[in-house]
Length: 376
Image (cartoon, rainbow, N blue to C red; front, side):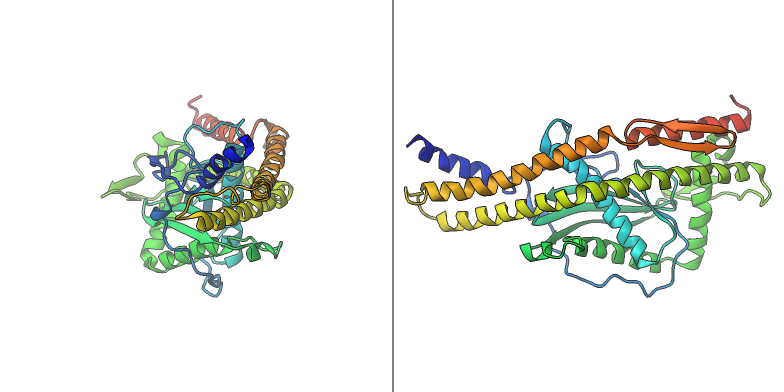
């Protein structure tokens, strides 16, 4: 009897996943961040995106694109908590999925995943995961170019079924990433040729200013929140030549780190897919159960041992995949390979997580340019 009495409680706890409401806070990127990944306010989601063909026939733009690893959408995430750790995995995998689709479109320059926001690329995409349960994937995406022009600031929602998991070679939520890529291209087509030329100049100057603010402070000016060139350096400017060399070194670092993101997808991707599929099956079962029980009291036959077994089996399947993914993710972070780079006659070795390595690298770049200027 005690077991049967606990069943409604278990059902309520499980059914609560995805049915609650949470208040957002603002993140450092301006995208909303939510309290709990297991709590969703579905009324704030747009309609699911329709499946569409990725635009590939248009002329390639010379813009380099940086896709920043997505924000987790969780306040104070705990690395020891399996769900928080899995969200950390999703932020990196989602960024690589978007990078792959943008690269596949063939419409951009180099598209790179950035461990953290920087002024490296002319167009930077930031994202925050609002909700992810294997059936629904909801993200907030913001795309801003070097002039501070916002190309895209929208929420995207994709919904899949179990059939979308049958083809293991295709990302189930591909429609969402294709929709983002196509929307970005529309924004690009709305730019006048003069705007594109100005953007390229500002991108170079903004990156130079980030590394050497004293030397390049006077080259850019702000007009109604948008950056524009105040003047341009001479083609033979030795400082710009140094900046270009340093930028090539940063590109080399990012490409080296990118290989580790590829490894992440190879090692964690299959288990992540199984976890999402198990989560979808659990959500489907709970929804069907709730519909059957709606409008009437739970009777003993509905709380039978067989029904309880079904609920527990679905729940256990998700937890097994969660634990496997948690262990893989923890192992990947602990075994992240150090990055070794050649800089002239010097060899730089960076350790720690990919985020920590990027922070170390940015400090080294700042010191390098300071030495070049003679300020150190």
